[in-house]
Length: 258
Ligand SMILES: N[C@@H](CCC(=O)N[C@@H](CS)C(=O)NCC(=O)O)C(=O)O
Image (cartoon, rainbow, N blue to C red; front, side):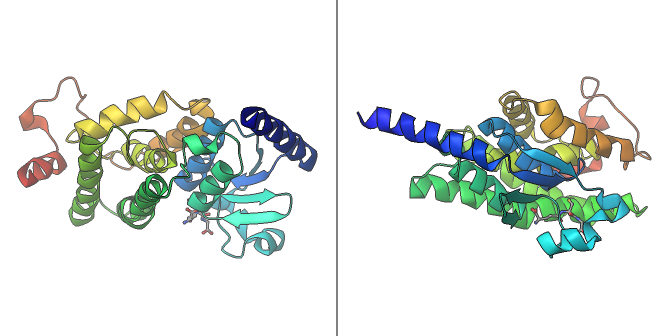
């Protein structure tokens, strides 16, 4: 009985969503926060109306967009007049308003708190460390060893979480994994060395495999970072042919820390 009520409610909710139309998502390919939302929608099977906003050309400063989002950032969601910015808020909203959302954003307070913990870890530590190092390089700044050390310190923390748990926030894949994946895969595409992080590299593959339409939801955006070729001055050594003596200074520092 209770099960049939839940099914009926899901059908009614889905019908109401169809009547209300698809939510609009203002996005830009290369943006990691946008790709967190796109991967979340993909995992949840939510259909969004994608509106490309070319932030490289300053389209986010158009008065009509500033009316929608005074922060002039992507991603921005417009769900039938309900407007939300901040990628992690959008991802949790999508999970909370869709029937299968609990699978990636649990309702149990403790399980949810662990997911939130890792979302905050990404938004306040890992992602800012990534931006600090690679954003200036996009404008031509040289590679900065001290900033790379900070980023590696954060990656070491993620490595440790993944040593303790199957997924970033426990036994199941959650939106925290999607948030962290957007950051880590972008860092890798920017040229960051993940050779010293075996748990992270294993986790990238298994998370990627669980995301439908991964190419559209993350890979296309990552490819734009590869095009920036930020570490072009460093010698390329393939993973298979690496020896300890060929490891980058970054990897050596990580191993010294262990
Ligand atoms: N904390 C925000 C960051 C959003 C953000 O900074 N987006 C960048 C693209 S990655 C942007 O829209 N930049 C354009 C601007 O700030 O004018 C989130 O997670 O959504």
